Image (cartoon, rainbow, N blue to C red):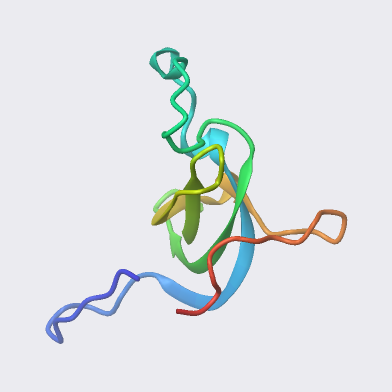
Length: 111
């Protein structure tokens, strides 16, 4: 998580939360570009669907919105190779699971 290691800096401006599972909207995070239309079986899946993630904290924006610090994974189409990432995402780019939807998988909540 982004943290300041220096004691002379101001306190962190983001608010850590109890980690909770979320759905990350891949089309919002990684929009499909016309140059991305040549399939590559070794590339990670982006541009469509959702992936499970973990919300780790919030950061208020100057315009009144919020960014969530979210850890999530991207995988190859066959699911054999995975890369983890943590990114600040606008609140509309992910969602907490509702009772109507399946449970969220994805990265471990702790560790």
